[in-house]
View 1 (tube, rainbow, N blue to C red):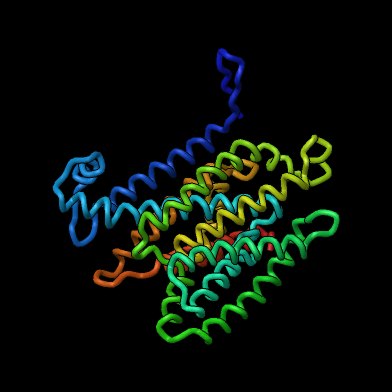
View 2 (tube, helix red, strand yellow):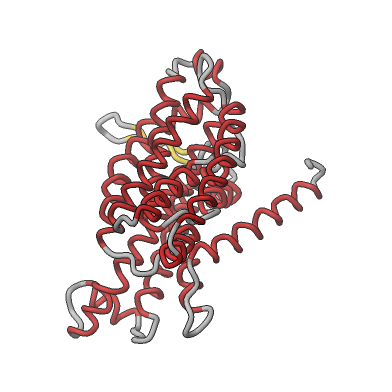
Length: 342
C-alpha cells in the first residue's frame, strides 16, 4: 500500500498494481472505443475519429460518429461500468465469488418488469421504466425475505437463487402471453442488445452512475473492505454494518436496474469483470475502480466483436458476453479443481 500526503494534510492510499490495472483497462477501453467509432460500413482512421470528436470532419463524418456510433459506444461503456461495479459490491457483500445480480435474481426482476410492459403493449420508454421498477421491486422482496435480525450473505444468496428461479418461470409464462412480434422483440431485449441505443438510453444511466459511483467508491469502499472480514469484526472496528449494507444493496440494485433498462439484461459482465480485476490486481478487497474499468473494456470489446465477427450480420452483445463469460467460468472451475479446491 502506497500513501501520498499533500501539504494540506490530506492523504491518499492506493495499491500501485491496482492503479496500473485500472489505468491499463481504461486505456484498453479507450483504444477499443476508437476502433468501434472508426470501423463499419464507413471506415475512418483514428486521426479522423479524433478530429471529428473535437468538432472537425465532414458533415457525413459528424453524423456517423455523433449520431450513429457514439451513443451506442457511450451506452456500452456505462453499462459495462455499472454492471461490474454492482457485481463487485454484491460479491463483496455476500463474500462469495458467485454473488452476481445474474444469479441473485435482480436481473430476472428487471426482465419481469419489462415483459409485463411487452404483454400490455407499452412503449420503449415504459419498458425501460418497468425494468427499473422490476429490479427495485425484486430488491425489496429479496431483502425482506432474507431479513432476520439483519441480512446475512449466505441467506441472501439462497433467497436470491429461489426468487430468480420463480421469476424465470414467470418470465417464460409472460413470453407465451405476448403477441408474436412483441415476443420476438422481448427475446431480443432479454438477450441483451446495444443495437439502436441512443442518448435517451445512455442519459438516465449516466445520471445514476454519476451519483452512485462516488457514493460507493469514496463513501463506502473502506468500510466495505472491512465488512469482508465479517460482520462482527467490522462492527468492532466501528462500521455501521446494517445501515451500510442497506445503502450498498440499494446502490447495486439501482445500477443493475438502470443498466438493464439501457441495454437489457447483459449476462456475465457483473460476474466476470470483478473476477478478472481481482486476478490482475492480486489485491484483497472489492477492487471497485479496476472492476469498473475492466467491465467497460469488456463490454465495448464484446460489442465490437458482435458487430464485426460476422460481416453483414450483427449479434446481440449478450450472446458474446454469454459465450465469453461461460467459457471463463468453466476455465475458472477447471483451475480450482486442478488446485484441489473443488
